[in-house]
Amino acid sequence: MDNWIKSPWFTRIVSLFLAILLYTTVAIDEANTSRSNDIFLPTGSSDVETMENVPLHVDLEEEDYVVRGVPDTVNVTVEGPRSVITQTVRQRNFDVFVDLNELGTGQHEVEVTHSGISSQLSVYIEPRTVEVTIEERSTVSFPVEVDFYGRDEDEGEFDEFTGEPEVAPEEVEVTGSNAEVDRIAMVKAFVSFSELAQEGEVSDAPIRVYDAEGNELNVYVDPSTVNVEADVSVNEKRYPLTFETVGELDDDLVLQGIDLNPVSATLFGSIERLGEINILDPIEIDLSEIEESTVLEFDLPVPPDISRVDPEIVEVEVVVEEAVEETWEDVEVEVENLNDDQELTFIEPEDPLVDVQLIGTQSDLDDLAQEDIRVWIDVDGQVEGEFYANVQLDGPEDVRLSSEQERIRVRIE
Image 1: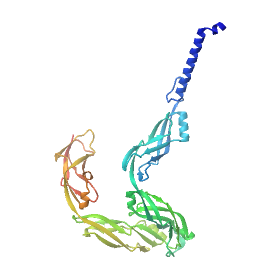
Image 2: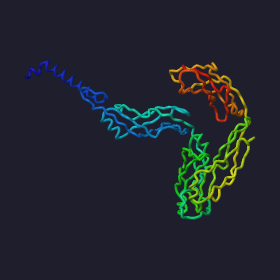
Image 3: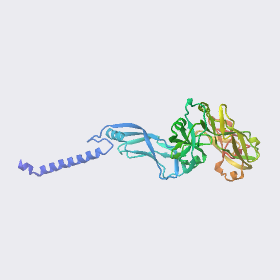
Image 4: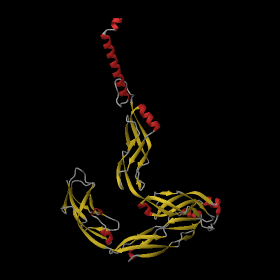
């Protein structure tokens, strides 16, 4: 036995066995860290699981922007080893986000990405991309108006306030995009009338922000609630004032704007009657009677079974300017909804060019660029052959567009 152990062949065989053992150990190590199955040590069967309503975060370091169009949540599907999936789903120790740091203002289509998920898993996110709008942010202070609701039915006829309600704070800061902040007409705190009458004060009354038409705006308010104190013994409800136009201005005039002063009115009456009134009739403005910029006064009618309205008279400022006419020649005609396998030929006129007449103020026309005016035809649903397509014009709202070429003869092949 001793001679056999001392044999050089014994040493060589033992060395070979140790080398094979070392190679096998390394192979097993690599197999356990790889996503693919290994012949030495299988990592476990593959599995698929979907996590719904995963929060979607926005990565944007700039504080001067407002982001719209980003959904609150997404669905995340992972595929890979069951043990890794189980840990990922249970802990959810990962982030799903859109990176907007390199983008400017405007509309963008961005990819939804993730971090913190094991590299052993394949990840599928629904939706894969989202369309977002980035706008510049503005912050403006506004006074808070109070709107009351919820008077008890058995309190009988109403009286006036014995004193003006005290609101704290009297002003709040409203943050949103520049366009939204410009639309703000009123900032209102909603207060329970019965609670205020009973307690003399209401804490944390919620604040809502509206435009001139009474549409609620999606903006950030700081603080989002206020405290109101008052000796309450009256039923009232505030309504936004709106207008509608009838008739047409003369061709030599362009409407620049219509402003109401004030933008809301308060009705006083029983809580039952106020609850039946959802909106006030719009103020009717006849543009055919407007010859120049002017301020008109309109009496606000008192609805039936309402004791009074405040204010009783509303001023309406109508701003007009003299119109200027220009003609842009050879504006290119775009084609909408032409199938990829179709070819369109212009017959009359032979070139896809038309002249466009523009009517507006001199300043509006001076500010226009070529890309602000769009001339197009829609061939949706058209089959092969010749036909006439109506010429359609798009441009700024304050500029009137027309063209003598109302229809274009085309052929689809």
